[in-house]
Image (cartoon, rainbow over all chains, first blue to last red):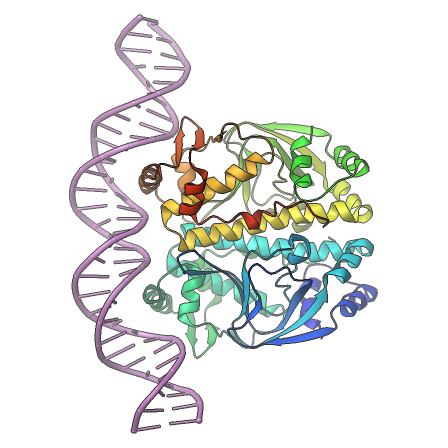
Length: 239
Length: 239
DNA sequence: CGATGCTTTGAACTATTTCAACCTTAGTGG
DNA sequence: CCACTAAGGTTGAAATAGTTCAAAGCATCG
């Protein structure tokens, strides 16, 4: 069941069978969440953490004046609220952007893991560190990149994150976000988001229609985005 | 020497004497870095991590076309590159924004700690998780808040982060950033940054001159910023 | 067919950048 | 002590980027 997590971790380090068994043992319960439903709500103090197995999810915050900002996108194999295990109170919501299948781990089990499995603990810590690195890249893109380059950067990043969990076929992947949701990722109005998409389309290195993004010229897209994948830590090495 | 770190951690959980001793034992070496100098450079693979003891530091990324974005600010008591212990390669630089005093921990010592001190390991992990939460708030502010509210939000946050390490006196703290550096935090031009500062000044809840910020009306500043401190995890509880 | 939820377009308005000065402050050397 | 300099702060005006409002186009579904 937790294959995408194993793919994710094994792109960063080696796991032995015992470790894989321990992960499987704490992720037995499964949950399904429908599109637009919250996986976890802001303000909650969950006693479990959720591993995304299938679908797209996002973190979001609603500001005082009712605007929404998505602060991360999540693909299968990622722990969407692992931090709740230590942080206790959710400072943001987690929403399903497509039908999501989720594996659930009790915090008590994660705590037990942290007491007895230092190597696994470091790898779960690493998972949260990679999510931090992604946030920082989003800050750079939001603050200092041209909007079309920002969009291109997000596509490059998702392409690689999805590829390591085998969700890319023929340079293309399922992408269920509407333009309004994408505007909430980039902090733009819907109208301007639409124009930025058209601008990137005119660069002729990708297509996006009917919930599918196809990268037709990876090198050009990467150059246009100013994308450098080091921050994704895609090197298998002892950690 | 590492008092600010202990203050930081003890605002989130309780440490016993043995744990404090272990932290002191791995943070014996001291380093000083002058203003504008790099603490760590992008692309490096450091074998140590740095705890900030005094001064201000920032993470930054330079984009392909030479623009700079600061992705975090750091105050005493924070581990500025703890993540390098697991992530290995720096995907961004770390610069001193004022004269910095730093305590250095070998990665080998951190690794040993992670093998033998699960509770301390969780607290160091928590430190990196709080830094993530801060990044997410910066994304929200950058994407969906009015610029003056964004600035106010940063000031609220720094006020609390500095207060827990006793760097706030009479509602005021030392703040050495120039307006250009602040523009690199908020992703604005220098000229616009200046106008945003004037706008916030006209709200009459804070002053900023000669490297000193004074919060003259905390409630008003907080309301204006839409600031909610939950994301800083300022509750002492078992983790 | 008609409703519904996205996408696309045009036009007026507002926010932000850019360029080019000028001002202020805190050294620094004569 | 004072003129000189360098760094940072402030201002105005023109150009560009992004928002808002309002409407039209385009698929999908019962």
